[in-house]
Amino acid sequence: MGKAMAKAVGVDAEIVCGADQLCAGLKGGVEGAIHTVSGVFDSGDVECAILVDATNAFNTMNRPAALWNVRILWPRCSRFLFNTYRGHAALYMRDQSAPLWSREGTTQGDPLASLFYSVATLPLVCEMKRPAEEGPEAWFANDSAKVEDLQPVRDWWDELQRRGPLRGYHPNGKKSKLVVRAGCEERAREVFGDTDMEIVSGTRYMGGFVWTANGKEAYATEMVREWQRCVNRMAEAGAK
Image (cartoon, rainbow, N blue to C red):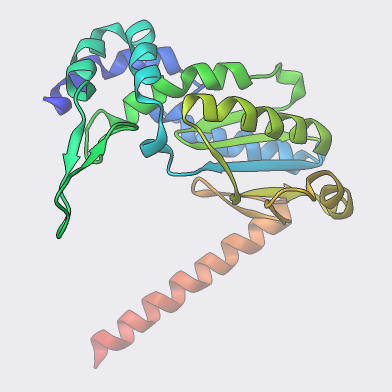
């Protein structure tokens, strides 16, 4: 039934989320986010890019608030999701007399989980949006990114930490990364020194890579060499 609903009304979630929350299925959305974040950082006009990950996001989503958001933003699927999630699923574990009740988040394996999460987090995404001249912002499920100078990005991070938990989105500094341009490392440590965030010069981002043009070329070259080594080992094994 979930697959049938996703096929029948999934386009509604895609339309309402648009380019704001890309896990709703916008065609080419992820590729656009990668090129935007990487391209603006590579332009040299900004000091950093913050790549944020949340803690256990699909399981900590505020379910009552999410169902209400779906009722407003995705009405054709709201009754189905309400009937699916109005009861608490029981998880029975070995040697335990009482079950563990699932009261928050989405159910693992639900075909509608990604669409449900995308619509549920859309109000938070809209609250965090800034004018285009203040740097691009990208969201894919629980992964978010912001590209700007260090202090505006720190202000954005602080606001995300304040607004996110109210909707079941808990930014995890230890899982997030701050990519900074060469020469900005000391300033980055001053601005983000009281966080657990790792400060790097380049890192992977949703299948792409955020770094300078030369850095991305070096990363791609090393990846090609690794693939070549793997192919050669397979060929050698097949020849024996």
